[in-house]
Image (cartoon, rainbow, N blue to C red):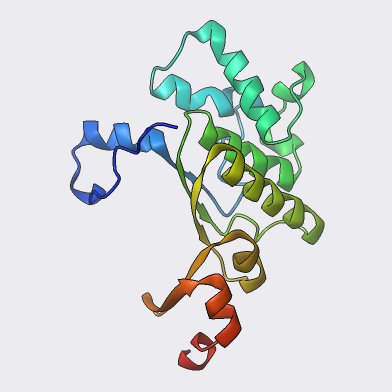
Length: 186
């Protein structure tokens, strides 16, 4: 994968052009798969939109890139599925579509803001498994924001516990879960 442009940089001081470059490598998966997707766009255009914004690739090849990334997130690549709008998809399919949209540009770094909080338990398990597989398969780095300790334990190598906007404890997930000292600080 590409070397991250923003590594060891304070991105809050980048100009618009520099920030656009950084945005190619870091993406966001939002908590609400129902409101984070444009309800008027179909699957093909939702996933291909970052390619259009960044003017990457020929229009004729966009469908091929969409196919690859949909397969990566275990979504079908059929003409019927590509024409569906978000209202025609399940919550799990919408959240996978959010990952596909994040990965289409080859992101190395993804901020996942409570990505499983609105999913059913069975869908949540499949989604977290997919995220772990993608982390290994394409060397992704996540910042995974969650209130669910079990999910953090499954996804994260390191955990930072926040209280009132401040980190009160951090470390490898095994250490934090073993001593559970952060519970007593809250």
